[in-house]
Amino acid sequence: MTTTTLSNWERAEFAVKHSNRVLLYGLPGTGKTYFGLNRYTTNAYRLICTEEMTDADLIGCYKQNSEGTWSFAEGVGIKAWREGARLVVDEINRMNGDVESRMMALIDSTASSSWQHPDTGEVVKPHDKFSVVATMNGEPEDLAPAILDRLTVRCQVNEPHPDALASLPEWLRSIAQAMTNPGAENRYSLRSFVDFNAMYTASNNLEVSAQVLFPDDYQQMVDVLLVAKSKAGANA
Image 1 (cartoon, rainbow, N blue to C red):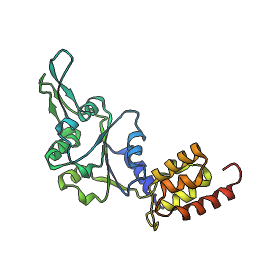
Image 2: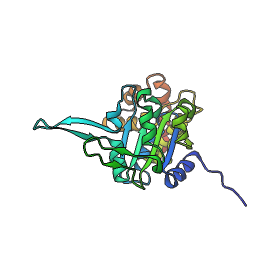
Image 3: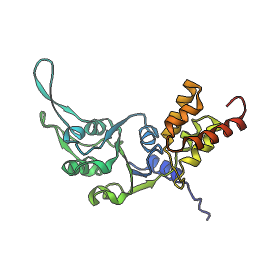
Image 4: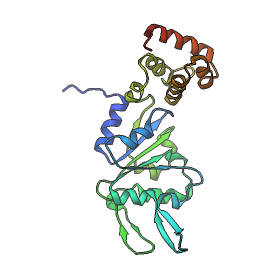
C-alpha cells in the first residue's frame, strides 16, 4: 500500500475536519487563527489568551444592567458549549496560571466536562458538536502537561496557507512565499504582504509602501518587487 505524504496544512485540514480538539502551532503569521475560525465551521468564538485574563474571559461574570440588577453573563467558552460552536483559543501558551485549571475543564473531553450556572443551578455540558482549535507560536512543550494532554492532535504549520497566498496578486505570490518561508534569512509574516498589497493598491506608490512595510531591507525589496512587476507585465 502506498502512503501519500501530506503537507503540514493538509495534516491540519484533516485534523480539524475529523477531530474536535486540535492544536495548531508554529511560526507567527501563517493563518492559524483565521483557519481555526473559518475552516469546517460556520459558528466560532475566539478567545485571546493574555497574562491578565481571568475566569470572566472564559466562563463569564456578573454584570449590572441598566435597571441596576446584577446577573451572570456567560463567557465565550460556555456560549460555545451551549451552541456546539468551535472555540478558537488563540495564543494558548500566553494564559496565566490562575486560569489554567479552568481552561483544562473547558477544553476537556465532552464526557468529562460540566459547569453549574451560579444563578439558576443549571448544569451545562458541552454540546456534542463543540470543538476546540488552540493556536500558539512556539512549541507544544511550552504548555503545561495537563493542557497538552487535552490537545493530543497537534499540527505544526510554519508556512502560509495556500489559500492565503492565492489571495495576493499573482506577481506578488512567489515573493511572499519565499519571504515567509521558515528558512528565509529575513523572514516576514504573511500579514506584511497582505498589508503591503493593500497599501500599494491604495497609493500606487511601490517604493514608499515597501519602505513602510519592510523598513530593514526595503531597498532590496523594492528591487525584487519591481522586477516581479516588470515580468508580470502591465496588468500586475
